[in-house]
Image 1 (tube, rainbow, N blue to C red):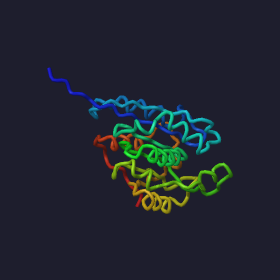
Image 2: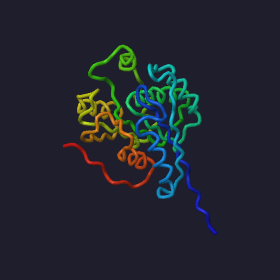
Image 3: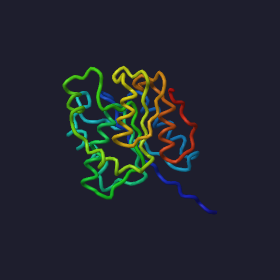
Image 4: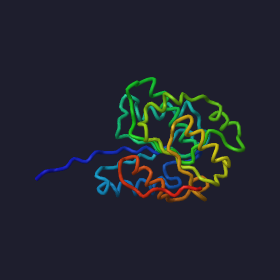
Length: 213
């Protein structure tokens, strides 16, 4: 009997500010992906990260932790990164650093949910993230051309200028951006668009998302 070997897709979820592995849609996403592996002809292993001191996250601690969990030299096309809010910036900083340490490294794809470069009413700790430079070219080099997806909402309470935000994701990182209606900061207990976006990045066929006109 011929046995078909299924690849293992490792999905790492970096939470929002103050979030943990049990927050929002993260546990639901893990359950959904791991249950859909047979349909997608792969095995999903979803890693929900508890980032250090994430009530007051710092770039230095985030970089160090992600490099420990995902040593740059071990990155490959079966690694997928999912960031939520500040988790998106944490991923970009990590990838820029990883690209310097491992010039040939590459991941399978990146999904940024409610990602931002600035917020409407910043406080000091978040200004440290907003003002920190990122080597976008270096970070982008680790992501295949069509494998950086961004989900934004047209009513995010933290970033009202969603169209300008979309433009920055496209200009700085050549991302595929979807603007969804009425999703605020994507903090619900389940989110089918997030699930389908990860499956899309991993090569599964999914229905196209509806975009706000």
